[in-house]
Length: 77
View 1 (cartoon, rainbow, N blue to C red):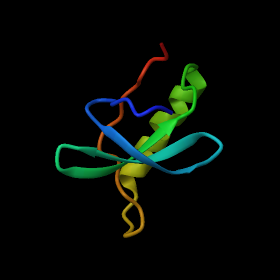
View 2 (cartoon, rainbow, N blue to C red; view 1 turned 90 degrees about the horizontal axis):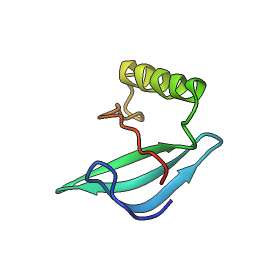
View 3 (cartoon, one colour; view 1 turned 120 degrees about the vertical axis):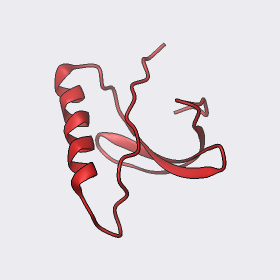
């Protein structure tokens, strides 16, 4: 992952990673965010996985879980 902006986010620091994604601390304007960036979402199955995770994440209400703010795709160069 490079430090390019995606949808006007500035990636500051990698927070963690797992089998399917990396999480980055980022800013946009004066606000801080956690960006979850999925690895290689270039198949129908992976796109379906991301959509489901976003849907379920938006339904969770817990003090240790943040809700999705927006979802977007960045195509590889």
